[in-house]
Image (cartoon, rainbow, N blue to C red; front, side):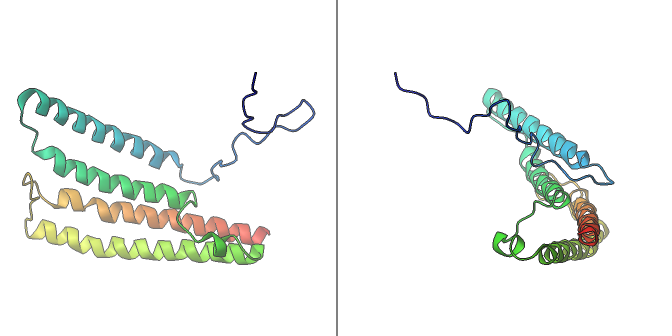
Length: 182
């Protein structure tokens, strides 16, 4: 009878067990569970309104008008919250060849530089998007689909961008302390 292929190395009692949490999060002052729970909530709301729209369309041959507009808004919020979580966990996109190569001091300096640039970018986005929110509010802009005030949607861009910038500053400070300890 043929043997099934091995899925990995077998361990005996004398060999050390592998680390069960190799990707454990670094400790932070502000809990990372905030982004995790916001992601869960946004995904649940998105799934519920989409499911409700499918049911209504199936049984009545019409659909809720607001679901598409609100779904797009929730997907944008979800992407921003995911970006915030990625920055907080230092899992944002980078070029491995440069980020993981060289001396430990060079890697720490590049990590600090990357975190600082992310913080500056999202601070700039937060500041500039406040003007967009103000214009939406001042001129009474309404959403194209259902006609609610547009600032109800646009207010979240500066808020979450500021959160990403603060998470990047926290990452910068952690990498700075790490560089001093090395």
